[in-house]
Image (cartoon, rainbow, N blue to C red; front, side, top):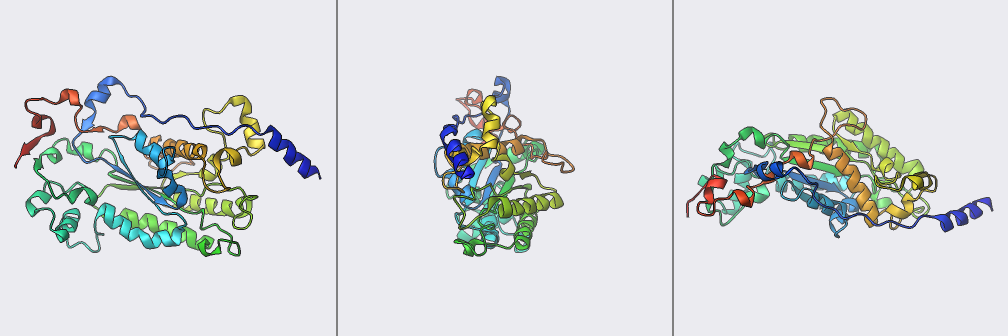
Length: 359
């Protein structure tokens, strides 16, 4: 009886669901904006995971969509999330994703340019031009109408490797942690296998192509509302175990991690300070962040976006410190792709790009 009274009181005093703020590109000094540019291929941020990841690109307020806006012209966001997947199925799909993004693995390469060889199979790019594009990812190299030979690769070679070319963020666990005897038991993966799958994924990504500059980070499973997901999930007794195991893998392998389970039970950064204690004590996160007890509302997407940005902005460390290691990918540190239009000579545009027309 007491619980019912408490529940009723909580529902009548619950704070209204907030809407996320608009996402914009963080401002940088005008001099930096104009002159901090590059002719090298843009780095890529590849998101791998389940529906939390896939749905992050399905609407204007998705967390992956927000990342695309934030890194516009600086880093391309590639979403390879697949709803319903667990780490076992993600492990099976990983080689196809890596071959698409990084080209053939070192084990299958015959020593030639991996990205170029992949295109050569389709006969879409002449051998001579492949030599000018060895730093480009496979999905960019396969161009049928390449008409420019670029000398960009010879310009500021160290700048190209100042930041990783490929950043992978792996986010599995929401489905792995389904109850083995629950409504979604086919998605369940035992805890030890889950940890093994994450470990193998990281190792495979890191060793797939030694010529590529690749880094990896992990997302823990997000929290779920046990009351709404009672037939398939248990946040306090099961999901948390997968979170802890994910954290152990990150620490063992020295990769950054975003603790969604902890962070998404806290208010967003710009939350009204006087309501913060109420948010936590009344579990307002279930209302603000979750639409059905597991998938995210627009505000939930925004909170996930905030937490990922914290990790991406945080400078990388030689030794992983507790929840403080990042990837050093702040927007202000990344150059914009291609010269600013104000610096292009209208009568000789090729000069700004270091290109020669060979048509």
